[in-house]
Image (cartoon, rainbow, N blue to C red; front, side, top):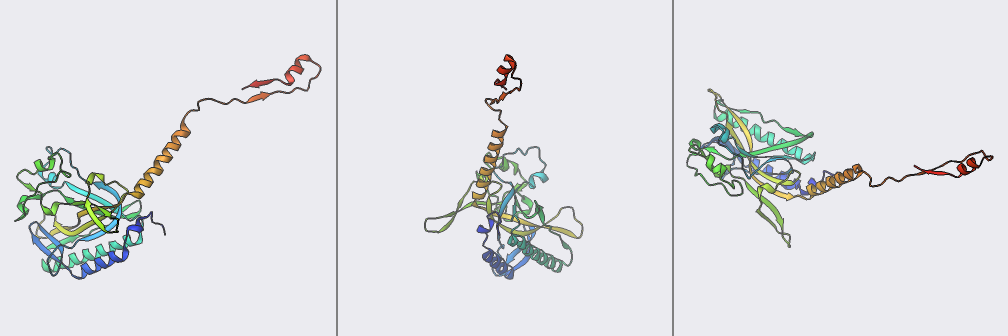
Length: 299
């Protein structure tokens, strides 16, 4: 079955094995700085990262250049790097959502048990784009300083904040942590088949590219709660890797060709060809009629 070429980049067996192994050796734990529940490994207490391959169908990525002076502190805190991926109907991509639901159930059961019902998880719902499942991934640029604990504020890189808009927006209340960082990469295959991951400018990602996204599962509390605290499970973007832009480039070329063809068809002709209209008469008794018998008129 043809899935627009994405199946060439989707190692189903490896992806399934990786997810199964991670879930088997993973647990959900609560953290204070920032306050959250996270999916972590049992033995080393490290955050579990999951990878998914899909087509980039929406993006809001650096560099960040918009002015922020008019924004409230709460609005600044919600500024984010954001992508949506689709599998264009690829069954394995759709089946991956079952893994997400398993993880959500794991969060829900652990949170209810360990918090004795004080922490509740909101249901994570799947999104659709052109009828196909979409995975929504994002990561905020900032964390409130009061929630950072011992974590240190780090500067933004030039490819993310070239004119220091985000750096200036920190003020006294916001910090940029490692937890807020996203790695932007490109997969490169060497002459001997070796695979390398090299840095890639985030502005060079285009809708239609086939990408690999690395993300983690984090449940953040919602503000303004009473005794029962509602948490929202997020799929937090950690890295975005360009796998291939060939399919997008082929589609762009096809659209350009069709556009050029339509434009050509709509152009006015340089010169109109005129057909000669010839008249023949049955009247042989008249000189004028005989002349008209062979007369042709350009039209």
